[in-house]
Image 1: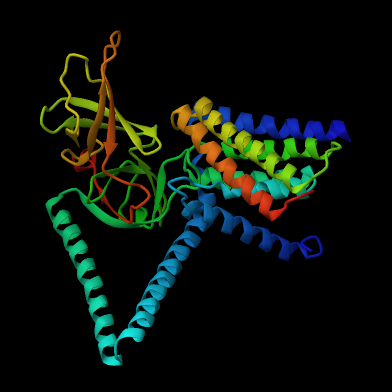
Image 2: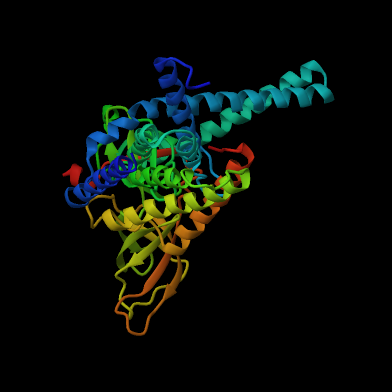
Length: 156
Length: 265
């Protein structure tokens, strides 16, 4: 349906979706944790679009997320890009894309996404928190995301 | 086709790495921060709308409940009473802020928190006021409970606060009773650590920390937090002291911006 829309309509639709997701991430707290809903959007883009179209889109999402932090620009661009790249390789395989598989993939990719952001900050900026807390946060986010992905039945 | 795709991926990763490396050496590229400018406007509108809806829902719920129990007149009176209580509370809060403002010579302005950070790795907040209201980079951000942080980045209408719990944050502090000086560093996950306190100094759990003003960034005497735990390593020169800050970033609504000592001179 989105593909049938005109370019302008599509731009505004994506702009609205990205804005709503980023705003939701900014305002929602689940027991003190940010749920990383932007990842679900990135995952949807990675699964449903060709890498050539998906990469620029997720790069913009990453850039927005990085710019909000008012710190180093790049960790989210890199992590979201890697989600698209990993998904593109998995998509080209012979695996059957069931909701459970999609959910498990979402879990693994959330962990990768969180870990890439964390390690980029460690290498290029400062250690954002102790590793055990980081792992705990990433795990919580992965559980939330995989549950949402399972219920949304995102598939290629 | 496969080769082209791989080259595209490599180009993406390499560009991001170059961007990161550049910032690792030269520091953050500030023009990129303007990207969140429109988002801040939307954030402010969303906060405003949500508050209005919340207020509306609260009021309508109260009206419904009252309608079941009492007559029209009594209901109106109760609503009036509730509104009065709300105004009274607001009045008390503002009075408290005003008295604080009067007692603080470095007062610049009061601002509302319009957004937090969308991820768990950066401990920053966005305020609804910027350079037009007199806010400048590195100004101290205070609350009624204690120190919140400092201004990290400012544009005309908005500013970003670096919280004291962020690992990039360092505050010169002093223990209120024993007057021992140290540096309070953020540890992430809403925690802080008091650094550079030698092993031979006696540090008591529960003692309050205040800003010392030695860093010329934060005015002296602002409460920061309490000492939560103390650990003395056998081979270490300094103690490992965990601090519980007074502020809770998740519930912060209004903050006060204070000029630092450097600007007073």
